[in-house]
Image: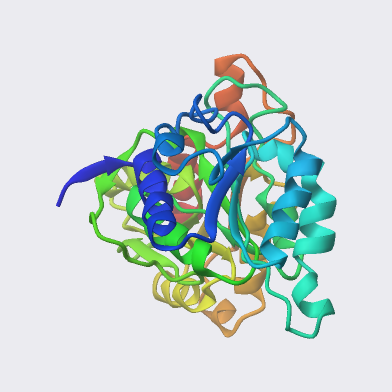
Length: 326
């Protein structure tokens, strides 16, 4: 099977859906000739024209409203926000309109909207362009939250997101765009709401999201040399959350650490930890549930400080050893 990048996988999923469904189109700032802030839509305007690859004004409030209205009246828009941080400017349309329409119209309304959100730190974009705000959005009933960590999952989940009749927020970590994976050329779907057991182990479970899946796998290799067998679970989607896969893993290993890039305080890892603590798997635990998240500070521009603000491989190794050895 051929290998392509995460960026190419997202683009390919959108192209294949647009070729098969004329109601699917993409809109956003500088996505046309320029190809978007990260080059992901490069070449799409030549293939589909400006009506289906729509350059928009620089106003997240305006374009999110247009996207919600378009979805509610029969189209299937994919809205690209240049940085996930800018979702804050579009909050009213996404959380008060898109998320609630289906409920308020007794299930008769559909809002098949995908909002693409390049997020995360590590690229030197500083405090206003490097946040991980997905926990905000998981709090809103009516939204589905997707966070793929590999090119394979990104393509399959993008297809599923475009076909879903509910608004889906699609988080793409900027540092993952260049990572490669084996990805089929044909269309396929990864189910929204199904986690993936990425690595099997017996001593401790790490539940990791986004780029932290890759860092946890690196940490697991280091820990294996020290006699610690790590199991890694990638939720892939935060809402809906596959609790069964996570709980089965914790039941097996009796120890669990949740690793995420967002600020530890009130991050989504707290939701996962609470879910485990409130379940019947709690009695299987041999140690308290551990959370490893980012420092409660705006993301610095300085590269050394930026790394220090979010979990790195060595942080995962050290915290995992404390969890196992006490």
